[in-house]
Image (tube, rainbow, N blue to C red; front, side):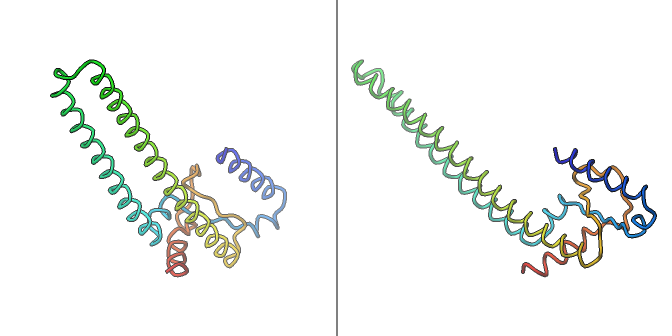
Length: 173
């Protein structure tokens, strides 16, 4: 969808250029590499560190739950041959419920991590777009394309990625 929209914009721009020599003279394009920006701005690095710390904490929680379950299962396996059938069935059901609960907790933690990552990404993208818009207005660009979204060729001197990263980091200390 994004690529199709991008191609549509490029086609409109090329059509405009071909119909008017004046428009071609005023038409100014720049490029950014959004994936590089999202890796290199200071906020992204901080966010990545926080997400990694949160992921490690979640992983530790999951391992703790699993170890607790393994201990319960081992204790059950030792005592099961000596248990009455109705007690054994009850304990098996308890273990099954504990296993299901662990699976649900793991899914919940995974969803929480995905939501955190998405929230951080959306916020960073909003700020990056703002910086790109400011640079585009200031420098008089007609459009700024994202090479990470399917631009097949661009001249390196038209790449403003470094400028966007520097201005972003200056604005968002």
